[in-house]
Image (cartoon, rainbow, N blue to C red; front, side):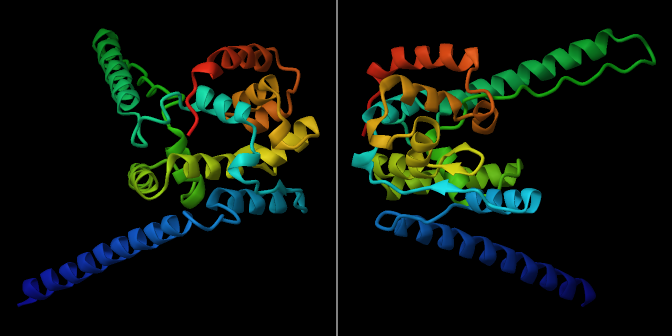
Length: 254
């Protein structure tokens, strides 16, 4: 009798968890569906950044202005695709080949750790190998899913949710709309969000007037915007921008 009640209790809790998870997915799907016609005022990441800036500095210096897709320089669209996601127009939101490469790198790291452990003197443990840091593994759609609706924590559960939202974005929105949302909400410095704010902040001009080189510099900043904001004369920024400019002609814009 007691065991039956216990099983019943656990079953009830499991059912509640499943229902809560399903309700959360319905909420996310509803939000994404609405984004097809409504421009979101802010993202989860932006709100967390605003809170951090206010608590750390006591004031909020914020630059963001939504601009329609047609008012964003074609140079910037090409530069961002060339830098962040060269196959953006063709994939389904996830670069499965990049994920496979990541798995292969992790497997190699584990094999190296095992070999070092086998060669280590008796009584002395070898240091474990760090899992390789995967750079450039996230597509534009994945980055948008994370910034729009998710926290910045790095867990398998959050990564799984990111995949679900990525698939939803690709299913419910056009590539053009995904890129429009991304370019209007991506971070380009502390308190600087979106293409228009970035163009005004760094070049004192609207996003529609960015040159190819200016667009390439902005695209190069995306993985580490706060870092490069402090190093405007970085040699890497200039050389990498030249590389991106050379690739921009091959970038396909939706």
